[in-house]
Image 1 (cartoon, rainbow, N blue to C red):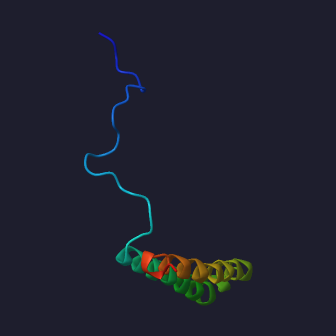
Image 2 (cartoon, rainbow, N blue to C red):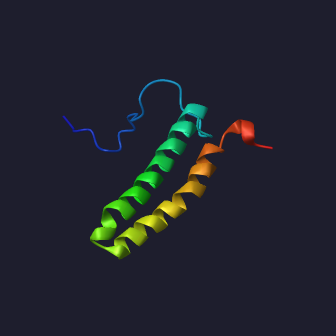
Length: 85
């Protein structure tokens, strides 16, 4: 009796209709936007309320990371099909 190899062409995807690639749904985009903006706020608050006492450099780095997040959050939030022209 032979053991099945890793190339036995068995399906690894769960049964059901295949997912089509495309923009995220409205609820998913809203959730991602609010999570990203929440992370941004948490980084700013932690950087200048807690971390600065131990390391100013770390607080500045956290602030720079928080500065980069909002543009990506806006891109994710506006990535829906209804906003395309």
